[in-house]
Length: 68
Image: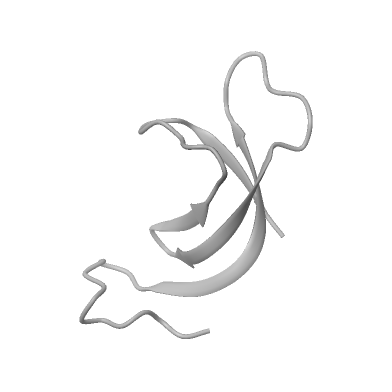
């Protein structure tokens, strides 16, 4: 696992590129049934994650992530 190029990455904390499966659920009431939407993890770091999902999310959506 290598940090992304610092010249292109202006984040306070570096991200590490990582390929993994992610199950994503919106945190709503009532809680959704099932395993959630499958997505692909792209990178992860101290201040966040980046993943690619088949459906978009709205800014400020509260999400539950299960990383495999």
